Amino acid sequence: MTLPHPETDQISLPNVLAALGDDTRLAIIGCLARSDIVSGLVCGQLGGLTSKTNLTYHVAKLREAGIVHVRPEGTKRRVTLRREDLDARFPGFLDTIIATAVDLPQVESTLALLNQQERACQA
Amino acid sequence: MTLPHPETDQISLPNVLAALGDDTRLAIIGCLARSDIVSGLVCGQLGGLTSKTNLTYHVAKLREAGIVHVRPEGTKRRVTLRREDLDARFPGFLDTIIATAVDLPQVESTLALLNQQERACQA
DNA sequence: TCAATTGTTCAATGAATTTTGAACAAGGAC
DNA sequence: GTCCTTGTTCAAAATTCATTGAACAATTGA
Image: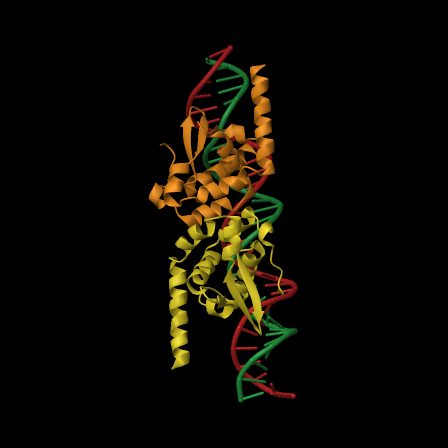
């Protein structure tokens, strides 16, 4: 754990709510919810949402609030939802958020772009 | 219904989250949750939290997001949580919020002040 | 009617957040 | 070693949000 993450029992709802009250960050959650079943996403895969610099900023907010986990992998950063931790702390809460976040238009276009790039790589 | 309120099915989670990401507004929710079992509170009873002007501002935010209902009663405004509407829209969500909001220190002191004033009136 | 109560409006200030770009650091591929 | 990729840092700018105070409107009660 290279980057600072709050312990599960230190995740505070006011902080979580403040972090979720932003469209870009909700969209990040939506992308993760759709893709991190296994392993999450690296920041670059969220590039459809906003600039690199801005992504660093928003992902840090989500991490500091305890909503995502960020693990360095070489020069990349793998981002995953802290599903279990959030469920333990606020049962059912994350499910409600995800149910809405996955349907955000930004999420749709970002994931479409991602699939497109993956296909281009394979070809 | 004199003031504009969103219909139940038009309550949007992003808006709700943005509205809840503020300590003063969370405290308002906390006060309401503790007191509005029957009839809610009027704005003046929330005076312990911040200035009158500022209360107008925050209560409007909560109303526009669909979290509270505001009904004019003479020169007063009765504020109630839209519990049923929020439960219908996002099951369980409000309960999680309330569980945290009622324990906020601001809520404690505001309600203490309120009880004190009520006792003074009766004496 | 007159005064007191309750809350709103408006414009202005202050503060916090978000966004941007240039320069940088760390790893991986060659 | 030398690029290239990925992401960070920093300071600045832009934007949004919260707070304040003065003036006002509406209602209530004496």
